[in-house]
Structure formats: C-alpha cells, structure tokens
Image 1: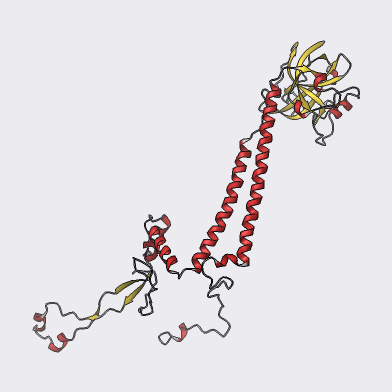
Image 2 (image 1 turned 180 degrees about the vertical axis):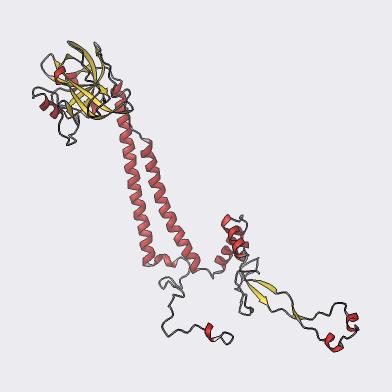
Amino acid sequence: MQRRSARAVDIRRPGALERKTAAVYDTTTEGMVGWEFTRTRRWIVYILAAVVFAIACVFLSHWQYDRGQQATRYNARVEQNFHAAPVSLDTVLPRLDAYDAHDQWKPVAVTGEYLTKDQLFVRTRPCGNGTGFEVLTPLKLSDGKIFIVDRGCIGPGSDPARPKSEPKPPSGTVSLVARIEPSEAVKGSTPAIRNQIESINLEQVRQRLGGGAVYTGAYGLLDTQTPASATALTKVVTGAPTVGTVIHWSYMIQWMLIAMIGFGGLWYAMRTEFRRLNADHPEERERARKRRQRAARKKFTDAEIEDELLDGYVPLSRWGIEGTVSVLPPAPRSFGAIGGASAAGAPGADASASSQQSPRRGPDVIVIQPSEPATGPAEPADSGDSTGPDRHPDRVD
C-alpha cells in the first residue's frame, strides 16, 4: 500500500464493500463417511422420487403397449373385412340405426335406384392430392328403405366453394358393392348451402331428405357398380386403411429408457456426493488418481486447445498430476566486462570499477511439487513456502 500513490488508493466506507459468499457447506451431510448420507431425509426423498418416477414411466410404457396391441388387432380386423366376400345389407345392418364397429369396411351387395335429385356434396374432404367434395347419393331399395352411398369425390371448380360439376349417377336399377362406414359426428357451423353438408351425419342427411326410412347407423363407400357412371369419380379409399403401430412400440421403449435415465441420474448424484465426502479416504484418493491418469491419456479437445492458446498454459491436472508450483527467487549473478582481463588493462579503465560489476537476475527457477506420489496416495503438499508475485496453483510459466 505504501508504494501506491494517494490517488491510486480506493477508500471505501465501512459496509460499502459487497459481501460475497466465500464457501457453502452442506451442514446435513458434512462429516459423514461412506454411504451414510443416503440415510438422510433429503436423500431418502430423492430415492423415493426416482422410484415413483420409474413406476410412472412403467405405467406409461404399458399404456403404449396396450395401444400398440389395439392397433394391431384393428389392422387385422380391417384386413379381414376389407378382403371379405360381399354379404347382404340386412346381415350387417338389421335395423336402420344399427351399426357394429367390427363390421367396418365389410363389403355389402345392394340393389336399388339412385335418387338423383336428392344428391348431396360433403365439402372440405380429402380428394386425391388436394381438397374436394364427396358425392352422397341416396339409393332407394326395393323395400322402400334408403341407403346412403358415397360414390367418390370430385375437385372444386373455379369457385372453391362449389364442385367443378355435379356428376349424375346411372339411371334405373343398379347393382353395387359398398363398404360399411359409420355415421360421422356433426361438425362445422357454416350456414347450409343448397346441396352441401359439413359432415356425413346420417341424421342430418335424413332431415335433408325430408325424413323417411333412411339408414342412420352406417352408409356405404362405393367399390363397384353395374352399370358404371358416365362421369368417373375418384375413389375415397383404394386399399385397407390400417393405422401405424411402430410409433406405439417406440414410445413404449422410450418410457423404459426414461425410467433408466432417472435411476442413472440418481446414481450419478449419489456417486458425486460420495466422492466429495470421502475425498480424504486413502482408497478414494487412489481411485481419484487412477481417474486422473485415465483422463490424461485422452486426446485434447478443441476447447482445451483453445484454452491453451488463450491462457498460454495447460493445468497440471490435465496431465494427471496434482501438485503445486513454486517460483523460487533467482540468485544474483555477476558478469565480467566483454573481453575479460584484457578489458581491465585497457587505457583509462578503473581496476576497482571492473571488479564491481552490477549483478544481473538469472532465470526464474520453477519447482513442481506433486501432492501425491505416482505409486499411491500421499498427504497433500504444503505450498505455503512458495514465494514470488507470479504464483499460480496450476500454472507453469
């Protein structure tokens, strides 16, 4: 402080300095050895939380397994129904409001006459590679009942709100094969257009037709018909529409892995705490030394190379060495004049001045003192004797 000028001294009033935490100690586990810390309340809570988390992951994994099984059974039923032989409509739909989910996609053979004037268009439906309209045409059967047939889809015209044309079905009696599909839920609140609907809700279709004996439990997706329509429509489905199952098996495995990661995180935290509390134990010191030696054999990372370029040194711990570095004060050395004794005999030279040369500082002597021998654990080295203004615990200048 005496070397500094008065202007360089920063005077602060008491209490003006910012108080900083010098160290934080865990008063709960401090002083414990071995695995005693796992019996504390905090670590018991950690362990129970990991167990509860793993149980939740197991339940979620089992849930995904059940969903995968359901999807597998659904796909098997769809494949069976889609390729089954056509049956009569009364076999699948014994009543007007009847429908069994196990009969979905099952083909039925129907004969009747289309009611062309009552044809409807379902808007905003997938059609090919875009969006279009599905064409619903009521089919009047021989017994007077009305079965709704989805004959296919057609794209929009110049006005996106309307189909590009209104294809007419064949007149007279037709024989067709259609696949059973359930009635859809009501959706949309758009004001009704003359011959358009938002969804294939068969009760709404029945009201559009003015009531009567209309099948409201299910309708039919046209597969084949005789005679064919003059205007070909795009089929809504061309193959068995199965659902994916791989995603459910993937989620099932992921939940199991997440449970294992939870236990892995708990073990990592326990191991870190064990090493901290038992750092002075000879066996733990030996294990720490071996870990440092294994880490020293690894290649330098890009970050370490960059730190070396910026700092100008590599910490000793990176080489597997734990020690202290001391910079000893250099001993003064005297150097004679150039020419040695001949310079002393030169004209005008002072003999006494030549014998008293100004001392020059020699190079700094750096001593690395390992804190433990390479063969086993040892007591930490005391670096209190280190002198010099450029001391650094991990630095070699």
